[in-house]
Image (cartoon, rainbow, N blue to C red; front, side, top):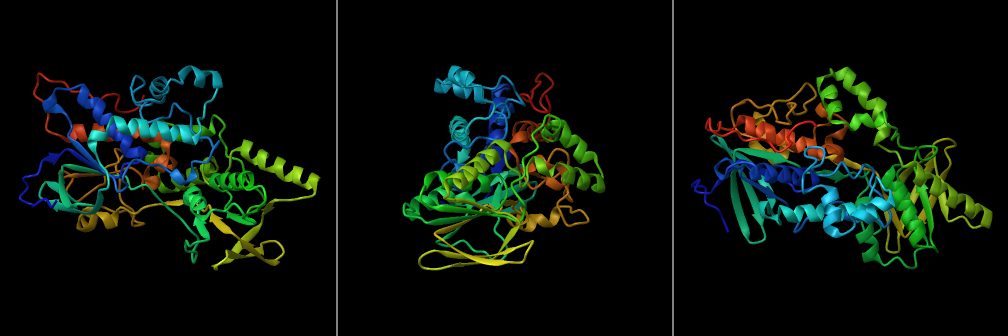
Length: 442
């Protein structure tokens, strides 16, 4: 169903590209704002998502795995504590509020938090176009044209502002390609379901972070006849620093500190606090894995093998499984492991928004390293500051710090982006005083 470019289509104040937690939080902020102003001052919006329905890291919804952020860092509470889209209203709606309180849990399971996200997404379903893949963004005078491919054809949406939230892309080591027996951890559960690994003899998990440890734990627990080899270059799993002062790096105020610092200070801050998030594991999980490995030594049958100070040098896939070649970083000794599957829990990388922006990217300012210049309000600096706005949700770690791709800031950031959009729109008549529902810092 093509949409001819006679510009007869409605113009949206905001078109969001991608509908993960970040743009879901923005949709909630928009919904709450629109409920607080007259209809003619509402912010019109449309969100476009390639998936046919809402989903967030479905491949790692491991039974029992918990979130690493407090339930209060949900989609709305830090922006608007009275929001009906918070985690506490979700629990009340599901009939589990008292049970959750009695459970004395600060960190819900990943399964439950995903259910919360789906519940919240259903509340703003009228703002979302699923199965809609954005193929290009083009300038059209003072507007942006967002070209979309859908199962029934193509369309174009017109926008005064676009908010790009493309999410993260699974990262594999150079030379490693996913195949029948070589997987990224992001697709662990569906791959296991498809492969039917009931008779598995060995799994190899590559990586030293939370996802790697969770994958090793899950495979060891689920396949009692299989050996699980955890391979990484560190001596052992390193615990995440989740102490109170270290956790302040995830506070809204920390974004101000990072944004205002010079490049050298930013590098130092990132180096100091990488162990709050990158290649680290919850201490409780580390202790659980160590306990299992020790008990297996007592029993004389070691199924959980932790191969530290070891690197993978080659992976090859065959008809009956994969072959992994390793090298000890300390002795140089080489080894070869055959496995039913090799799981690379080697993290994610931010997706570059520039290919999606197409010709519009030429209008975007860059820093000395070629990265996009982004304002404190997450708006990309352009050669036409008064023109249409391009906002980023993600891809801003170089300007806004470690929370760029994390859940910790989605509620507050959505309010800040909405506040920026409102500040740049035509002013309301003097008799009207629209407000941003909880926008900005608490």
